[in-house]
Image (cartoon, rainbow, N blue to C red; front, side, top):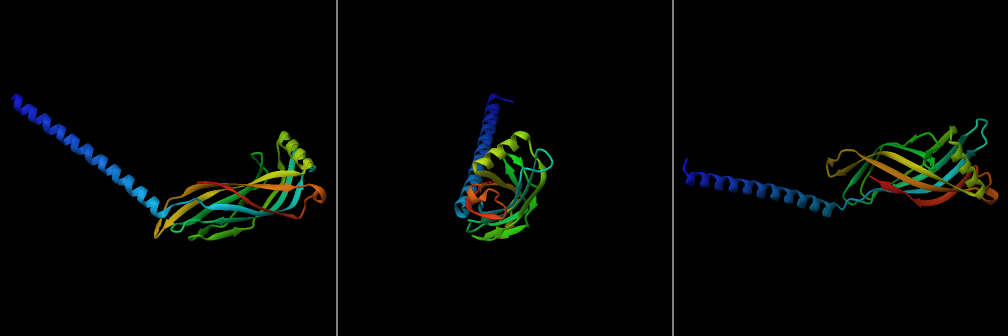
Amino acid sequence: MSTKDCGHHHSSSRRLIRLVLVGVAAFILLVLFLVFLIWVILRPAKPRFTLQDATLFTFNLSSPIPNTLSLTMQVTLSAHNPNSRIGVYYHALHLHASYRSQQISLPTALPDTYQGHHDFTVWSPFLYGNTVPVAPFVLASLQQDQNAGTVMVNVKINGRVKWKVGTWVSGRYHIYVNCPAYISFAGDRSNAEGVKFHLLQSCSVDV
């Protein structure tokens, strides 16, 4: 093969590589543009949760079994889909009460729900915990907060969501919701049993 032929071969190879690279770059830019365009049109937003109220029926730190807590509480939660073009499916939602990252109630299941555009959903589940084992330092902290007049209990929700755009439905994504509930034991609420607390507390939502 002559030197001229080799030069022509290398030139063609370089031209082919450049065309491939330009094609790949153009495809990536097209995909990014389509993703950006879909985001601009849909403007997706996470669901918004609010803890409206909590009614405490049992909060017993004086169980016959050492280092345990008995809790019965009903909460009212609302979820709002703020999207105008995206529906939301909620699957396998479970909530429980927590104090300083320690679970103090059994998980309670919420029904599977679909939310249309701008829809609201309200749940009023009970949270139960009968002689739940609690770490001694957590129990001591609970007693201190109760004596001080206020205990912050976190109502936490774990589950899955799917997004619906037209007839297209996405895969499942994990959703985690954390709602702080401030329970007062001050004054004539020293026992705080059967007392409703109007909270209207916004919750943090991670998807």
